[in-house]
Image (cartoon, rainbow, N blue to C red; front, side):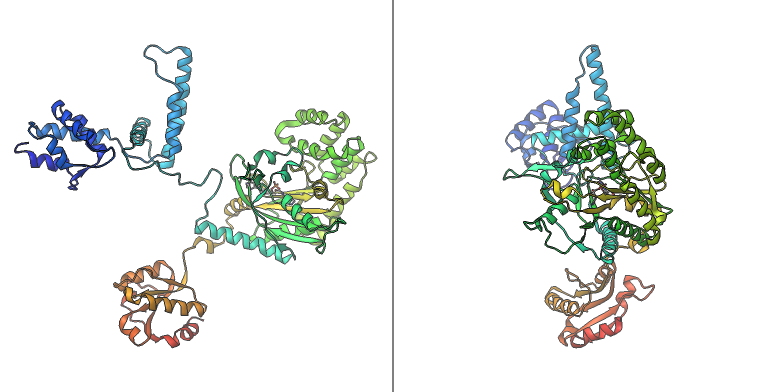
Length: 621
Ligand code: HAM
């Protein structure tokens, strides 16, 4: 190759590894002048795709051919540019980009109106797609134009197709849409919130229970035409059973209670059952603020009490919970209504009892579809026109008295009386400031039969905070011979956190969720790792929290820096000379204002192992 050989070698072998990436080698070869390119291609044919190409082999291929170094330099520049900017795309992005490409093809001549429309649609899809890619990869538009991203995707796709790039399409790092990762910081918030829920449950004498997140889909399907059945994460398992991730807990509770029923229809456990749980629930919903596809839902339910005393107890639990978080009746309210009033109207009109649940599901859509559509759907269910209009009128009532006047003489007034007594008793309980009568609250779940309620944010910015009510016929729907009175609520974990943030009520302690331990035990070398483990064990048995330095550090400053990051109060150094006398060195790290370096200089105290735990208990109490 002549005198320039070493220069060319350097130029090609920039990394000095003696090898070239196959992709770069092939781009380089393609950009060389004809003669060289032919020789290079021959060489590449003899090398398996994707394998690196040695610089030596390239030289051999060019042997006897005159090389102009400027040509090689230009070819290198060109090949590096043609490999394009490197980004890692996900498999979904690669697929989406191909789908968009397939939407339209630019014709050679003037596009027909159909082609023009398809191209326009494709342009829109591209712009949305590029923006999403920029967002995910946190790229600035001014640096990453649509064109540049497309070029990068093309290069990425090509390398995947050719299998030349060993890199695989990157996995998506975000959790599935609408679901959440709980990093330690978020998990600390979650645990804190759950502990508040648990405390209230226990304070009210409820027992905690749990069940599998996988449930029989039939439990939800048997209810009448609710939206929730459309939102299920259901599938047929490998034995052919139709199962679902539970969208709510109430049917599971009913199933569990029914399992406790004997042949005579008596529940074997002591009634009333007062149970609480904090299950994760799954609903395929459109995600928005405070609404996810998975959420945790604190449930409290009472089984076996017919009267509103049970509702009162649950409302008291909810308001106690609010107060424990610092939320007052100025921030939130609880809308109360009774389905029994609507039931009485429907029953007086002669509509069969089993039509009541589907009728309520229709009425609950009033906000979404308006009174005309609700009336039309009620007529379809054989509800007479006058009853339909009375239901709608009842939903407009602004007070219990107005409702009483409307129903007077037309239906059984028991339901109205029940509402009145609930509001009166709430005064004695001391939480009536939270309650508001709202005749438009019906709730979307089919099983409610009596009082229903929903907590809301008084500024009207957030979705429902909590919801519940009486469901006396759910057990019968599942096969119980007897009606079993039940009432309960579900309180989600998403909206409440949004509200706490807005009201600046998140406890300060959660802002600092760094690790904290009493001790870090640091072995001086690997020979002392075993002894260090025994020291850690000793301290843990003594009731202390201990983190072990897994990689022994001769440099004490490094051990101190680790202990600092671990949030340790003290460091225990296990070093050869002290260990010979069965002792360790303990240094207090909570001396104000010392850097890791200064802390390392601080001599500490040598303590015999036999005294270590007692001494530390005394010092740290
Ligand atoms: P629910 O109204 O469907 O009732 O849900 C209760 C609460 O769970 C809602 O108020 C909300 O806080 C939360 N929630 C529901 N769906 C979502 C979601 N997609 N994302 C975030 N939070 C959500 C029930 O589920 C009834 N089983 C409650 C009950 C228990 N009734 C009697 N006992």
